[in-house]
Amino acid sequence: MMSNSTGNSGEDPNLGQRPPQQPYQPAAPTPVAAVPLTETEDRQWASFAHLGGIISFLPSLIIWLVFKDRGRFTDQEAKEALNFQITIAIIYVIGWILTVVLIGGLINLAAFVVSIIFSVLGFLKAKDGQAYRYPFALRLIK
Image (cartoon, rainbow, N blue to C red; front, side, top):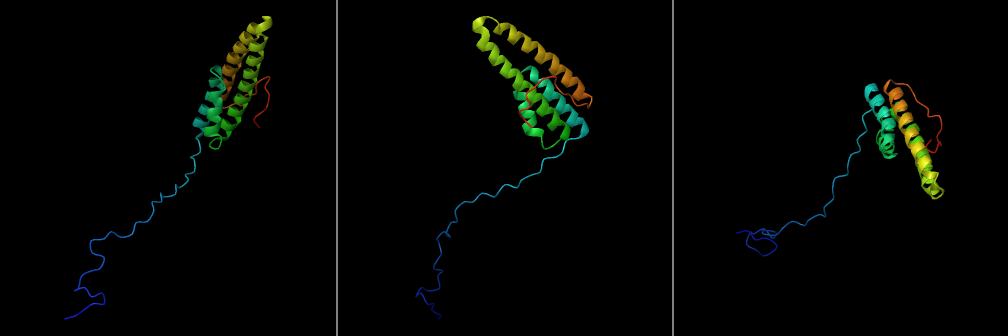
């Protein structure tokens, strides 16, 4: 008969025991490069950045953040629309402050009308693939 060094009669010393557990380590996410926009998609998102200005500056901001690295035209036009919408937002704040002296309502109404007109003009130009530059805007986003 053969004897093993543990003195057991041929039994595995780890029988019935769990192997030591390693701490859980999730797999590192693999960065995926964003797919560039086609020319049609580039024009589409650029024009939506202008048109979204009718609502507020948020659509232009979101479009710029999501698509700035995927399309040159979208990057350019969304920045332009965002700068204009930030300018309009500042004018709204000034109008609200001046409501105390009763001129603020007129300022806000004028800003609203101007915002709609220029946003639609920007949409129409960008839809056709032409860059649009607003007649006035603070160029805060470069």
